[in-house]
Image (cartoon, rainbow, N blue to C red):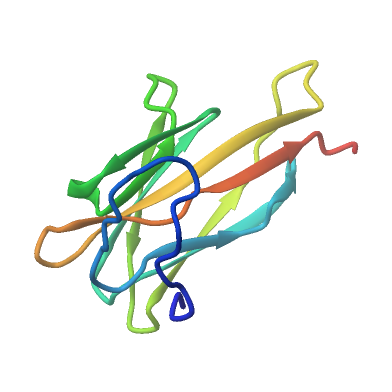
Length: 139
């Protein structure tokens, strides 16, 4: 997936390049959904990985070597956690979702979701975050 990546010159200042070993984990889904619509979140990883999805309305940035990646969600109390299932033999897990109604007076709501996968040895790995826009069903 990232075979064509290489270490290049620093973009801003000096830093430390941290290589993370192992198979990447990730998340793919639609970017725009409407109230009342069903959609799928597809999480990929290693067979047997337990998947947990974290949702929030804001982004952040904190590199976390314990989670083998960058936590890109805001760590505020508004972050919600959802156990989603286990990666099967296909190497992926499809999590169906139904977008509920939006709060009165709102035409759209921005949300972010990032998976954390727990392998069979107990090691945690962050997947990529995804930004979603939920729109009023009338739009």
